[in-house]
Image 1 (tube, rainbow, N blue to C red):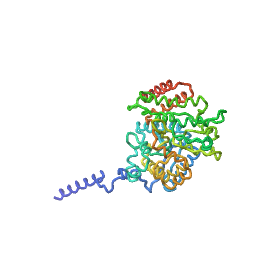
Image 2 (image 1 turned 90 degrees about the vertical axis):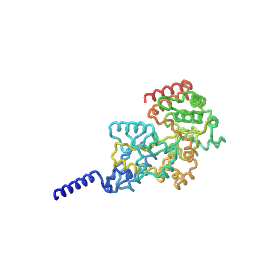
Image 3 (image 1 turned 30 degrees about the vertical axis):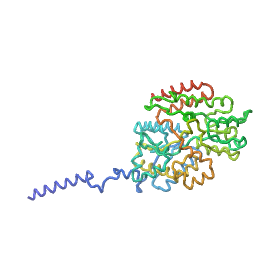
Image 4 (image 1 turned 180 degrees about the vertical axis):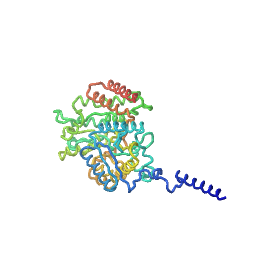
Length: 443
């Protein structure tokens, strides 16, 4: 009997030990396996986040450094290491190389097309577990983001990015010149062309419009004139040169060409348009709201300038949605990703976003930031700055396919050639359609 009792006791002891080893006691389970704890900081741990970004100069650099310092002052156990690169092209090159070497940072600024490529190789961390976790975002938080901007962070319906420095293109204009000439702010493309012609000086001392052409202006005109899609549903070919799309595509290529020929529009390179506008040598400019601090600094008090929603065409008003989102990389440690999520959540909070907008000229990404006291006061003092938020409803992104980056280069080149009469509109459209289709087919 004693031997049987001993055997039963031994069996029970083994079972208890096995259950304990397998985590049978839920009260002592590993918090790392609890989805609710995803993204929750532990006060007893030290965290380091490597954030690669492209804010290397000016107001942007000051703004992100200030916000990082504020965050670290509130979270003494977290170190945010900012790595600023001199351009988005450099940032993309560095990120691509780092991912290939399995040495990606914790988080970075990314464009939608970059993110799509990184996600294809499983380099991006899905944000869904963080959003739904204990330190996540409520449905009211999500609803507070502007829908266009929130959805911009998704790939195939999954949230991989949170919005950061978002902007749209607007029309900058010299208030003094328009007042002198008795011209109302243009609201249609025809009104804009008439205004450009009227304010141009025959002696060459002032152009109506000075701008550096890019795919974004062409895409905006294309949509405004009735263009629909840019890429086929399977992502293998360009569709802006096909069927009913061809006419708005041609008009977008040719509508301003006569004004370039006549000297009413000055086609520039890089940021030379800013010099023209700031010097009063052009009455209009087209650029993103993020250009505002640079323009304001250059103009000083020489004249009054303002912003307006881009004029619309026969199909309505449209504007390209610019700027990057923030993404997290899957190769980072769990602790680094936990802190990165908390920092991302901080940067997208209403208070931090309001500070960022006021300092840089970028867009509010949340309704509560736009409607809050900080920005309400700011926009009351700077009413022209509201052109950005007012334009959000017209914002669009042509494509998030990785190959669209190459299409951008092709279209920008051919659009510029059409504007400067180096190519006819028909030849330019054929060339850019074929060129973009080739890039898309290559993937």
